[in-house]
Image 1 (cartoon, rainbow, N blue to C red):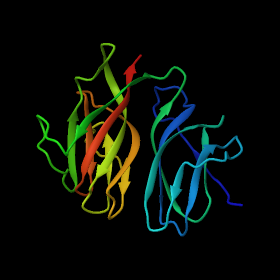
Image 2 (image 1 turned 45 degrees about the vertical axis):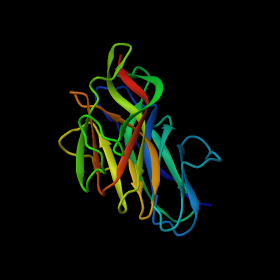
Image 3 (image 1 turned 90 degrees about the horizontal axis):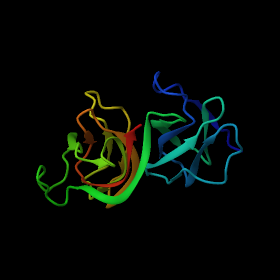
Image 4 (image 1 turned 60 degrees about the horizontal axis):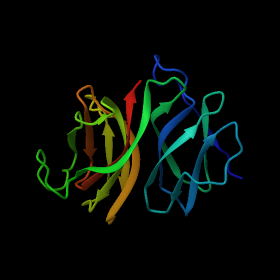
Length: 220
C-alpha cells in the first residue's frame, strides 16, 4: 500500500511547552485521480478517516487538528498520487499560553454588505486588509487569537487567501484556496491577532470574503 511521510514538528516557540498537537492547513493539488489524504500521529495505525479529499484539476484545502506522536511527529498518507502542502498554523500543549473559549457563532465580516470602515465590494487582487478586532472580549479578557470559518464567495479567478496576525512579513501559507468557476468555498482557520488587536487578510485574486467567528483564545 501507500507509504506515509513522517513530518517532525520542531518547537514553535522557545518559551512554550512541547506541543502535544498541532493545528494544520492541509492542501491537496495536482491529483491524478480522486482520492484522499490522511494526517495522523505516527505512533498509531492509520485511522480509516480522511483529512482532505482530492479531485483532479482541483486544489482542495482543509483545516485539521492532529495529535503528535511521543517523538513529536505526524504522518501524511495519500491514497493516490497528489502533491500535498501542510502549513502548521499553531500548536497545543498542557500549560500553554492561551485557553480556548467557544463562542456563539457570529458573522464578523462580510464584504457583500457595507461596514462603517469598509465599503461594500470584493477584496482586491493582492490586497492586504487589517480587520480591527480589538473590541472583541471574552469574560472581560482581551483576545489573543480567533478560530473562524473563512468563505470566499464569487471570486473572479483562481486564488487563495491568507490570514495572520499582521506581522510585516506575510507568511508563505494559505488559509483558503479556490479554483476558477467556484461560487463559494470555505475553510476553518485559527489565527493570532496583533498587539493592537488586528487580524490581517491577504487575497491573491478578487473575491468577496465572509468570516464567521466560532471561538477565541485568551491569555491565561
